[in-house]
Image (cartoon, rainbow, N blue to C red; front, side, top):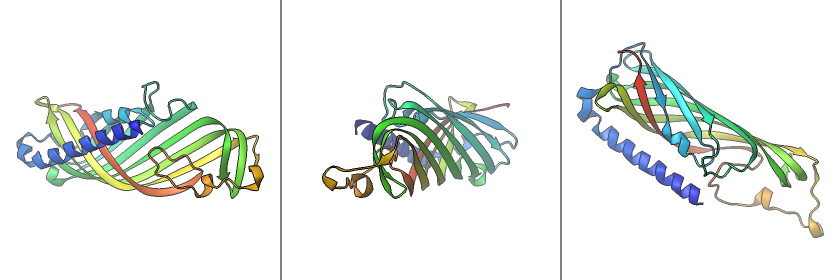
Length: 238
């Protein structure tokens, strides 16, 4: 829970900063970054390292199609041993994240809206236990868990200059959308679960709880999602 509270504080601070930057964007109109078609801006996303469940070193680039349109893609490379997170102890934990978006800059200025999407794929091993999958309660000695996430969001953001240098930019955005999570267990030495005294363990099937971490229950769900993005960019060329 400590990791969850800390992560929520960082999201809240980033959201407040975004609102402040958007409110000041028009006042900084004379310092708007150049919007030359064909330019490429390389970017780093530092908040990706603060993800308490699956931290990544995320980097990418934006290509400006015109003064008002741009496209961006980024990749999140798994980072190990940062000292926090709910999944750092998982055996053979492997994951990656892919992000892409199309942007529209209002009047070619610093304010933009974007249609964004991201995909997360993760695979790890766990020890023995019980679960409800394929309409049956199972007991198993170990399992490989395959977890995938697909999401789509609408975002609003702002780009402002950094260091009084026209090449450096600070890009901050907030977004709202939906995510689809699919979790599948590849069970080893599985057999139908035989509860003691004939009483079925109902918790995996009908238990209720607030999920503060990544979903790990077998099956597919669709839920709302929010995003707070902070990017530090450098425009190549003049």
